[in-house]
Image (cartoon, rainbow, N blue to C red; front, side, top):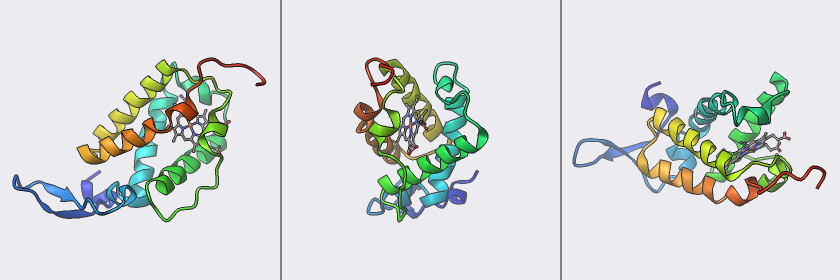
Length: 150
Ligand code: HEM
């Protein structure tokens, strides 16, 4: 996919002639608005589902449930990054509480996020902001142990 295809909003060129993104725009806009964020999620989810350690979290879900999860994640990110999107899902603590996601699984997840951002040629600044946003949610997602029914 070409850079312009995801709708990035370019803001002139730097001294090396590289195209730059306008830093005054929201992260949502700099990532290519709704379609850009959907492209990120669509690149990331197959990586997570195909991973032997992480894929188990979605095992047993029908295609339609996966579609719903995908939609909720797109909406969550679009809204969190300043887009004009209403996220109607559950908060991050509620959605992940009880899943028992470990620190090592989290680290693996972050490696996939970084691989996706690299694959889609997301610029360094936006990658840093994206990873910082993810890190701010780590404590809501990761649990030291999985206690059934608690
Ligand atoms: C910053 C990181 C993350 C974000 C922003 C995020 C976002 C979300 C969102 C928006 C939902 C849907 C909430 C709802 O159903 O109302 C969700 C559900 C889910 N997430 Fe995450 N997630 C993150 C990390 C992870 C990780 C690391 C894993 C597993 C390795 C994971 C596994 C799941 C699963 C299995 C569900 C479905 C839960 C259910 O339907 O019962 N998430 N996540």
